[in-house]
Length: 600
Image (cartoon, rainbow, N blue to C red; front, side, top):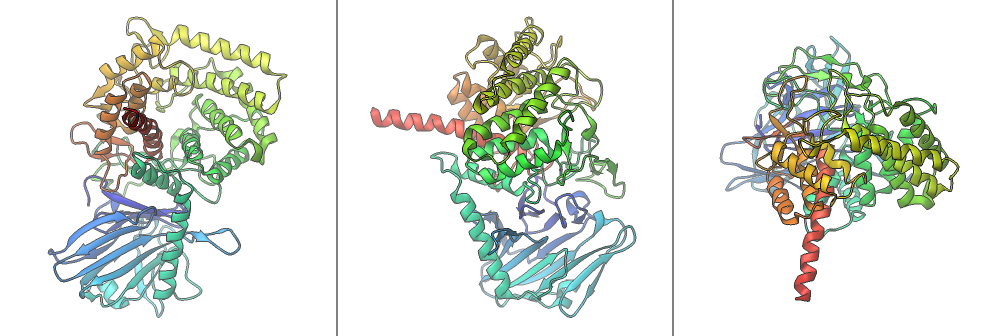
């Protein structure tokens, strides 16, 4: 198994799969993102299950995406023979204008030259490999099933000899061929022409989606790949956005910080939607806002910090003891107990998105009255609860504290609500709301600032620093040139930066001192340096950080301080949204320098 999360992601906004740089499909859940796995070698080398291609040692294997698409191409090249695997999950618009996105994966084999010989390792293990999966050859397909713990089936269609596929005997590639596995039995048996057409239609879908994404003079490749990754983590059916496509990839190898991220965190998703809206993808934003309005039927109902992708409110966490975990890092968890935590920052982040949508799409808001009701409800909740302690952005599982970031985002909630009221011409509440906004800001300025440390700290009365307070400036709480903000950035650099990578915090949490860098925090720090005027230092650190991505430009949640290997769930929406924000900011430096160069 790969040792640096050297995987590509494919998907169709219904589910996703991870394919290693050697062409092994090691993670896939069907029919939805959060369903049980059908391949999970990622979480257990021995029993997890994978779909592999074996070739002789004289082949050189490389992997890339087809430009401006989410179609992954793994190339196998020897002196006399060459073929490619084009991996994708079908997604394209039907004549009825809705999207065709079945729960299936296509592995299209394109012959380039010679007559390559391959052996197939097709070993699905359904239902997280609980119980035995048995595979049978039928006339039109290969079916795998399990019925010990739960009943489940997987269907494989192929143009190759089915007996040799299952036995692992050698297969000679003489022409293009395909493998297509899915959750459902097909009504019409696929053939090479139909599969090739699905490949072309999916290619056109992604090219069209990328055409609506702006081009940037610098970092365009990185912005584009990150944008497509965020799209792949969106769930078409409800508008939810996942934090990542995986569960239980550890923040540190051999430790227990392993969580299921196949859910929709209001914070992460709202930040994603803010960024993709900036890139012009209005439909994603509108669908997400509809997801939010559907979650809040009652005006006084407090938002959970996270939900299932179909709006589920209870996300019971259990451990799968039979799986050994990613490189032995147990436990493997499904579900997430954090759903019951109180985190007061989510209201500000959600209000920020609502305000942005009204500014950006004010003439085309379908649910303006619902959004105004949500706005009033959020201010009511903030007014009632902003003085209370919470678990904070990092989801400490022990005692509640008065976290600075949570307080700042309570201020943001009211600040953006005031702006929304002004946009909608609803001014009757402004006096009360402005007074509340002023009260919260004064409280933060007094209690979050530590004169000894010369910084805004993690929580009231604390001397510990925290990368999340860097967001005070982007959310409009404080000016970038304010001496207290500049001093905070400098203090965080001194205390939390380690060879250009940032700790979230250094004080011990529920599991001890973190030993890996949280990738989004490094992006926040680079943005902060840019904002306080240290543009070239910011650009150098950003360029360095980009070299730590995997071979396809993808990031997980964390980076090991020493080895720079990727850790944590993958690919991580948080990391890629922050990459886009930082790249857009830094591209302005290069543009300004180009202008100066022309003028000189």
